[in-house]
Image (cartoon, rainbow, N blue to C red; front, side):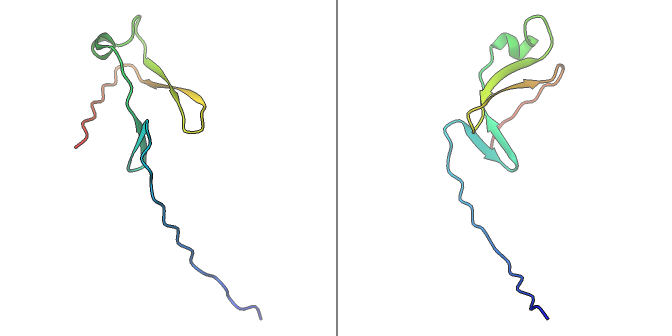
Length: 76
């Protein structure tokens, strides 16, 4: 008969500050600048506001806020 050798392994993870990203719960937050015009009226010609962000692994990805969505984030 084989003995049960199951064990629990625990990892302790220490987060380091990053120059561009901040972690809040399960989200990675990056602050991007947009013009006052974009903030009030959306992008020129309508549609969505889209910005390019360099990800942690160096890839450049497009992020956008869907049309008609307004989200204000005020950290405490």
